[in-house]
Image (cartoon, rainbow, N blue to C red; front, side, top):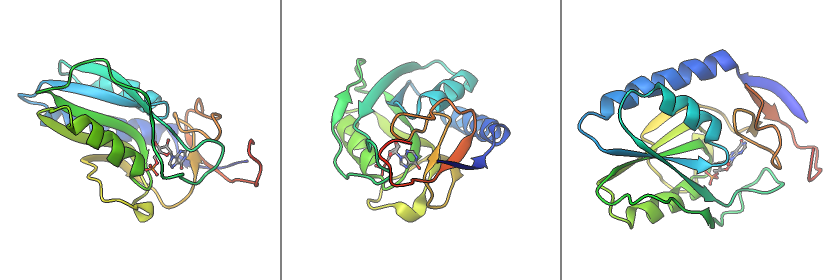
Length: 177
Ligand code: IMP
């Protein structure tokens, strides 16, 4: 069931704006491709990229997610690949949340194999205490403690993505809320 609000809409807007300014400063002289990791990052991705005043290409990738549980399975499969050629480009991987880091590590390895000029990671949220693999997050919005959250793109069993704020989700043992 839904718990308390962890991050308000106003706090999210401030975090996105701050990230946009920092990334803009990093973009000088670069030829960027911003890659949204579906589905969770989609709300963050559209908010962020619209605030960045720099020419860019956008694309989408989808890796497997948790399913109807709040624990990571540790196995990641590619469901949808990007369609643009990223060789020689500056890639910005845009994630909703980095938890164990397993998803991100796989996605970054897959993209690096295609010889981009650089790969950097942007994450709206990070749970550093949960990390299982060392993966560099170059731009982090907000660090949170170890609690399962939904809203602003984040789901539990595909639900709650459209909530405008980030709320805690407390599992009651059911597969679906
Ligand atoms: P990781 O591979 O454990 O880092 O998990 C990354 C993915 O798990 C994210 O892109 C989310 O889709 C999902 N995830 C991790 N923590 C949460 C959470 O608190 N709420 C909703 N989804 C989460």
